[in-house]
Length: 80
Image 1 (cartoon, rainbow, N blue to C red):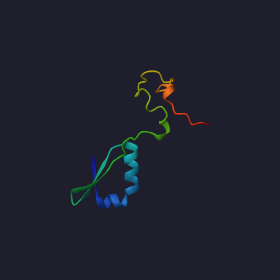
Image 2: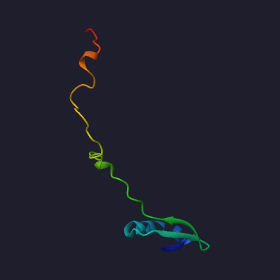
Image 3: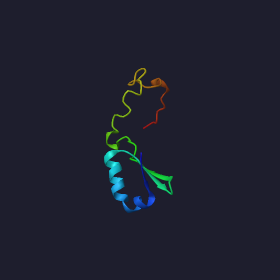
């Protein structure tokens, strides 16, 4: 992993960030030779654009999904 002093990072921050984005390799930032921070590319997150169908195959249909759950005689009538 590449490391650079904090003073150099401060002067070249945008180019360091662009390099990390382009190469995908993190950069360690040091102060007096001790690591203080790390600039790393973000980890991949699931795209919000493909949420439709993301649960496909995770459920199982058991029994008849069309008929009522209880007997029709037990239904309450509203009198309307």
